Image (cartoon, rainbow, N blue to C red; front, side, top):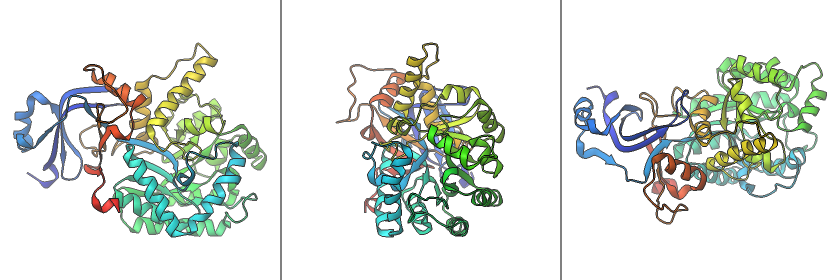
Length: 450
């Protein structure tokens, strides 16, 4: 038997995941095997364990049996998080967006020129998100190339799947010490991409990152679109977050039909593009998202915390636009994707309060957004997002009855109830193990605790 099909781990118990057709599939007494490359080699029924052990050449004594109140779910995907802002997460939520950026964000991000400071914060945010079950994160860093490369190294060392973006902004009159020239932005973006790719990290990739249209000139947007196309890499930015931003973009780009058109004109809307927020996009703009294959990152905590708006996820889904969830630290005060799940449900319920005829999102649908939806939004769904043979084993082992945890179980519950309780009440104490591409990354080893 070839090494590619050598079985390294076999688990037996309950697995929950999503497919494009079904928001929640529950596999009870299932058997899942992971090969030496960290990929799912087989999924079968527990009762067929003997036959499977013969077919895939593993020993019955190697099978790890999950406990009654445990299940495996896919790792969660944070499609939008500002790593440097983790340093003040949970504070500074008293201003609307543009004032918030000027007073809190830009002064903090300017400090990341100091690599010692960057090392401390980036180490903390990657560890915190991993502990909270984020196996894939799409990070905004800062304008500093070396600190952004450091974030990529830390994500790689700790085993997280990550897209990392050096922020580009050549127009920022409100923070004169925190911006670049167009030439610097272009040159440093090219250096960042080149040096990160040269590292050959297996699961960390660069992403072209114009902060958003308001802070980039048209020539820079055009250059970044060309760089992304030439290198065939991901793109991330912000769109339609607040009414104020929408109005300023109209003034700055009078020749563009819409905010979405600004990005589209500069080749920044592709099937590898993820745009955060989109609260105020028209149906025509959503159609353009669908046509280009671009996706949205729904960041409900941030949208509520900064009083930005409410995204109608149901309408996004109706337009068949790819969409995942994001924490948007620190506009969103929590780095946990469980919080993003809860706020997404609450936002949908607020829309239902405003319009009783609205069809509220179900917890099963939001579970899919946090897992498979996020991998689709980042165009990583061929590698990860659910439990399919051939995909990487990115997974959380959840114990709903973890000792000292936040959930009290009254009786033996069905797995669907256990999942719902975990999504609504659980925290990192319930996430007993985290795997990325078959490698156990949580609990941290002695080396990663340093």
